[in-house]
Image (cartoon, rainbow, N blue to C red; front, side):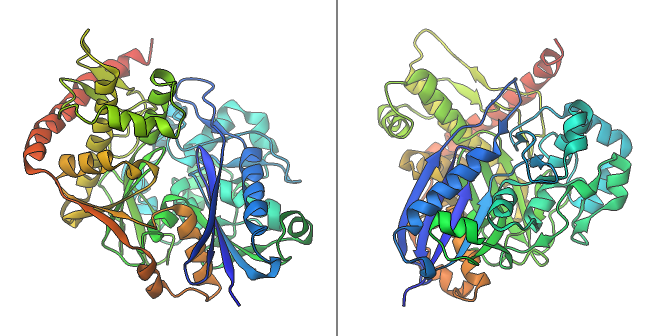
Length: 499
């Protein structure tokens, strides 16, 4: 009899769920949308109830398509939840999560640099200090929300929070622990008491059950099983930070292949056997075999986010789904360089490899002849430049092709532009590269229903996009100007941030 697995991805702008058979046949997919809030410039928060409501609604909808007992596992991942959701001893939510995009912990980052040397942080955690990381956000909460910090029993990542609510069990995936950084010893795969003491962070406020993506994190309770249309005791798998399962969803179970995920943000990743230290990358244990493999990535805070912003503010005649498609068509004849426009896409500061909290989005070259389609094209070029800047951090590890996944990658115009800017062959997949699929696969591996060797048969390359040599030569010059533009304005934004 056919058995099914649910894969769920709690994203920044919405939650996606997929129902597939243990043979890899996709039965149904659904998405629930919500939004994050930005109370101040550089701040970004999300609410736990939005995540829980979306997850439970999607499970209920997809589970109704099959018999309760035929759903044999659920894999669930989440956006990088930064500080995590603060809960008290009774599981009550005390406040929002300061998510990955939030850049408020600048003073705490400076404090870290005074307390711990870069070399010690790099040796122990394979990461450095920056407002991006969860441990600096927790320090901010301690300094600025002392009552909340004191009442907090645990800070739980998004996927860990939902699993806790549905199963009663608390855990943290090794990838989420590594991405919290600062106080996670990547050499021993445990919290570092030494670093936590130096930073005065109470590690008892963090989950102490570390879990691999292929080990059950908990089992659906009778109460929730009745509500969701599932069998009580259905295992849930905590698959960690979303971009890891997204990479698994492209069939990456071994080191070597570069994958670029283009969603709200951009992540360019390479799986290796040893951490690529001292390359300005973000590093944590990989979602598959976390004690053997490492996930090394650079990434932009805003990719699809600036496209969505542009549609909302300047093309409101289109909805959020049709807008990018229509703008792709309307801007298809804009030449390389967008008729003299250059955009710096740093609308929420920037993380790896620039690590700059003060930089902001900038449009250079506007004139009275500039059209909104030229500006849109320049936004897309900025994303492509960001991809190139990120993958170049891999140095000799970078091959001749990269696999491109995520919502923004569904734009054929964007695919060709990234090929032209990077000079690399772009591979897109017919199915695969979605975090919810990767989470379902990892859950299937965990219950011995899926063999990793079979997954590559499910992931079919849909298209190979080759770079246009002439456009690549022109883009080389624009990419140099892109880097020069950042170096020119970063001092201004540094001073401007203090006014």
